[in-house]
Length: 269
Image (cartoon, rainbow, N blue to C red; front, side):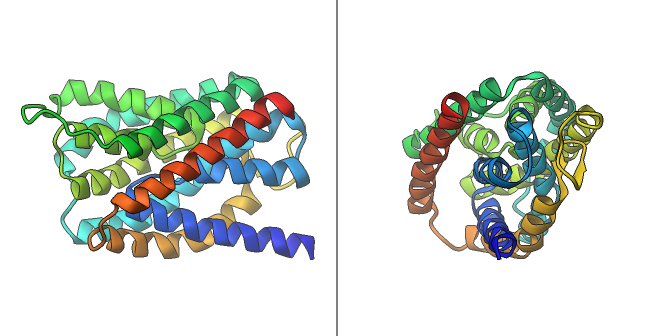
């Protein structure tokens, strides 16, 4: 019975993550990492590997979630493909390097990194400052550098990069709907590079639970993906119909709560 409830909870988590990924252009890692951490802490693995596996599994789910939401944003012609082409090399490099760095960090610092960037993302959502009218995106090599930074940070915390790329694009006078759609497209290469990096870095790691593939916990991956790929298109369609300001505010407060949980995990577990 307990196993059934856990699986049902992961299915529900996948639905929420998928919808928000499509709606807000985020990969979903800011939600999935704390909840997968809770699952592993109670049922699957020993202490030091918990956060690493949660981050890795979250990154792997974004591979599927991002593809599902990209399809809908593509149909609305909202993705800025020239920006994506310029930034992808940096995203791939940063995503792979971030996974290697994350595997070297102890549990507490990694949890604190996650909590810090969760708070940063929530604050960005709440502030919503207006950029200068003259501000614009950098040229190609500047975007490669930006992509590398976003890739490293996103891979470190198992996110798709939307918590950084959406505010960055908006701050450079990209329309909100285009920023969300382009961020969804940027999440895919980050997730692919991160997933490969976590598989390699966790391949011979000790004390991993059964059904692990490197640092990726396959049962959680399957459960979350099963519903996230169904709900991501619904969120993407809603992004082109709904005003998202109120939703972002609610989501920001949820991020603060999840960040506090990770701080607790770092110091009191």
